[in-house]
Image 1 (cartoon, rainbow, N blue to C red):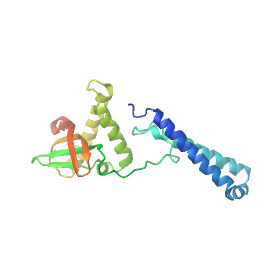
Image 2 (image 1 turned 30 degrees about the vertical axis):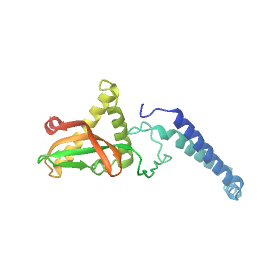
Image 3 (image 1 turned 90 degrees about the vertical axis):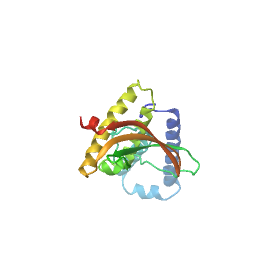
Length: 199
């Protein structure tokens, strides 16, 4: 699935959320004294307010299927906020991780959000999950090739960051992590020897 694909599920969820937000806003207008207070602002201010609220509603609906980084269109400051939920103990999770094999043979997990603080965790995590999905496509697909190329760029940047910290790296890999909390397994999807990244 395309990272920016508009699926029926997303359309239904967006419509339901829009209906809920509109009902909430209408409730505030008709069942509280908010409408009387707003009248004091004047007609021009009310028009600006309604346009701003309408734009905010629209962004909440549209922004949800932009899962590329950087986003093709930025809706800041009206952007939708990503929400997180707790994982159930018996739920199966698929995620990603970056790991480095050091020169002495030990493994070290790389916190990509720490290395790319300017980007931040939410957009980075979203992009990594998109690349993870693309890596699971057939090896001859366009997305698979694009994911390998982009991941190699991230690996090169991570190698340089680790070397700057004095870490002697032998290999860097992008892994699929599956399992339940406390019982996870990692599978390397693509790995690069230092010589490949430095060449």
